[in-house]
Length: 322
Image 1 (cartoon, rainbow, N blue to C red):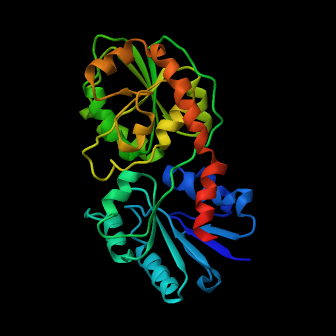
Image 2: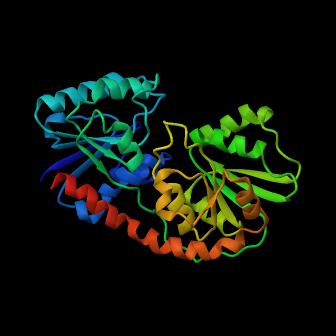
Image 3: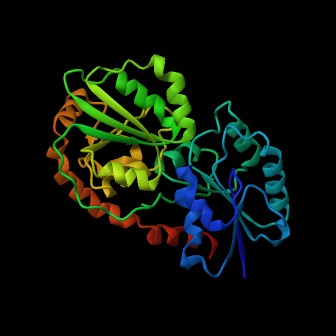
């Protein structure tokens, strides 16, 4: 039986536990290897490896910018596995190579021109294409059942995301339309909650915007989605680190059955005309006033979302190691 190991930046007791990771870029991807389609492989997932010689296929997950304690070990594992002539796959989901970050340091030290790289979007592949040739695009799947389309007229909205996306939300709140009475539920990680507390004095919240803060979980997200009218996904297409994002938050929002206003990231354009341009002030104001006007677009989007079930995306991963 061939063995697969995913290096991830936190300790994991059992491979199935990776489905609980707060890092979407790991949860959406490494967890697929728990599906029955991979039953012919022995799977291990952890931040280190007990016996590298027993590993046939090594997958490197997203490297974080706050784990300088593991970088040397990871580089040694990669070098040793490469010397053994076995396959290494780098799952590259944020663009760090040209950044002076710990993650940037890791990728510059570990990636070689002929390495196998997987990206979650075409844009991210384009960032690498000049220097790396063996690049495969595998999109993120949906991790929830597709919900019935909701048509709530209230101006009540949901934001969910990793704390690295909060800066875009803060910018949006500072420019929120003061004429519209609205509610906003913000769901993020524990780190995100700390960042919100630290940045609260810099956020100019309009008096007509009521904000609730919650920890993100699938359960909390589903619960909140039943009581809101739409999802907002602010971003910045000029930010090279983030403009190669996958479509995971957009397809999750559509799977929740909610209209969406979002930045027009390249990976989102498959759903062009199904979501509102959050950076277009006229469109965004219309969305804030009555998001239910755009519910019919969600129905169209959900037909495309069905192409990204976990089982369908897992087949693409399996093709890498057949």
